[in-house]
Length: 162
Image (tube, rainbow, N blue to C red; front, top):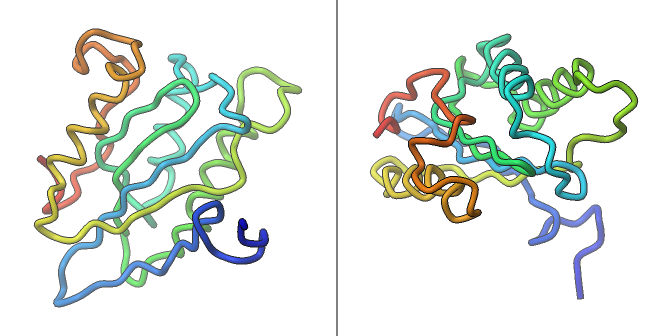
């Protein structure tokens, strides 16, 4: 039995508040999907639009990211402490991208929610980045992760950067 829409669970992520311990950096691994997994994102204009909106605020900083046709993965960290709640920041850039979408009258672009996981310092962050970086290869889009054009790094995220 699935949980009700207002109940947290596997189908409905709970987005716990990030927690800082012993003045260590906070790094979140984030996955955001398009509505109905439409293949909308892997285009030069959309890639540029995403990066533009990630740079518009310093509330959360985007480190490494990979944009695939129907979802994206990124690592992010608060730019200020106390940080703005992660759901508010994600809503900010998703709304900004949707309002500036190059194809008017497109309809909904984003899935309502997203998945996030706070990484522990020293946790195999290099392994997580390698997994994310190889996503285009696993999906059959390119032969080598280096050749996928819709990836990059916007900011350095202290301990996370491989």
